[in-house]
Length: 418
Image (cartoon, rainbow, N blue to C red):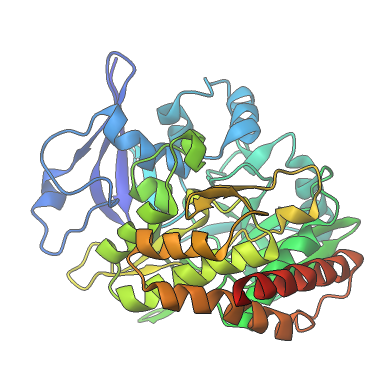
């Protein structure tokens, strides 16, 4: 028997996600949305049209809202559903998602604007963070419908000063908490260091803060797809719509790496040139992000680590921009992790072998001037070197990263001067 989820963008019905009689997931835009002045697509990969989108056409976007890999498997077991059933998972956890999309079973009302939160004491927060490996996103807990993409443990919360609360129903969150990972020592400090270094260098980046509750260290990441705005009844928390590059290109998450059919850097630059409201600025920002990841040794920068941010989605004043950087970790710091890049640079996957010629090839692929790209790599390496000590993090991992990145930037500057 067919089942339907109503799909909302902000608080407007956009369409219907349907699991048909054969168990296949398909998507239809609502006629009311298609007729709405200023209506915008839910995704770049789902242009406005009356014709139904097949599973192959729509799965890249909708499955891209969901967690990945082992976290998805555990959630499916905890909920008693098949891990391959995107529809069933969206039905259970698709309340507070990335961007401004919300999934509500057909016939049920969209949660009211009087948002509800559950305040957490320090012991409760510590308990949740310890529980995440076995209960990702707290899936199955009464009143909680949270979905975050990715394979790392995390939870969405609302932070107001020192108070931390869990959003209930469809209430919006403001931050994401990412606890330490036993397998990768010091990853909280690694990510915080890389993110703060990116900010010091001048790259737009999500704000981060290292915190500790009881014996649990975690990274507090401010959501760039949430904003406080002044309304007639005071300050309200609003969602901004967003999607990652895999979703925008209609590529499923399990194929996020280029070698597995995921986006290439050429595709990323072409996408941004096509959709950005300020392409000159955003293409330069994306180039800097690629170079920065290369310099700090973030080899895991795949298509789901870059996003488009939509302001005014669903209106005639839509603005599309490259989202701030997020999930920047020096994977090079961990010797057991691959030195291969998630997206090759100018035909080269090995991060140790990328040369000036490879960046010149990237320039050609991206439609950028070769002299500009050739000059920008050592230029940004110099800026990174000048800011290595400005992250404000005093920790053995940060100190080791400072030495490692300094050595790498010196090597790359020398390589590009020849």
